[in-house]
Image (cartoon, rainbow, N blue to C red; front, side):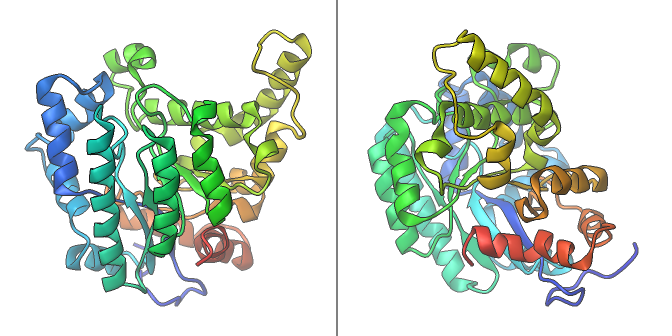
Length: 350
């Protein structure tokens, strides 16, 4: 241990953690039901079949902390020097539910529950609206309602039953984001059945690999379909150091431009900017689960220091020394304050 972790800005900045999860008991019970009755996809069976039923210390600790929006969570924040947590309903939210009405009712209750917790701890918690993309028009209304509740962003857990937000039917969601001026956070989910097979058999379907691959693909689908040409002010946030995309930018640009010139793919049309330029103007990445100094500094270099935000990924990763890794980054103090505090304040309009 190199230094104590305290709240209050003793190191010259507050620590705002931007990808912190909670759950409701209703949500967990629904996942268990879907695993039991066979309506869960393979990814949900793998992920929540474990977390919601395993007697292992890690699984029980995560469930207990997910369900707590009170004293225990605040104590955990205090003990690791986290001043503010930006909270969202844990993945995969209500997106796997086959009954859209059930999904909508459940997510309304979850958003209301979060709003109550934020009201009880207004200096420590910030909320993000969760939606049910199964009904895009309804979700647009819930985004507006969430903004009225004081929420500062919108969370989506990547695909919805194998469908992605680049489908035109989801445009009402983007219109609502534009009208409320809020960022969209794309959080990982386990890959859909059409993608998961080789990962699942190797144990690579979750956070170790499958999450990042699937979510990075989702963001690429949106960029290459021209989402930022239609909504030039839209900001999208992804975690885990950009789901690998910052490190592939050179090749992504080269091959995308080659694909456009070849006219090989019907949906791959010319864009106003390169993929790298969109990443530098419309995408932010967070450090959730990636407390690794070389990766953080690289992302700051290629995306810009205004594009990288701190996150812990609580409770899935709750490691005090990972906070210290950020505190000890060999970057200028002004850059570190952007990473830990002011970038989040700008992106989420805190």
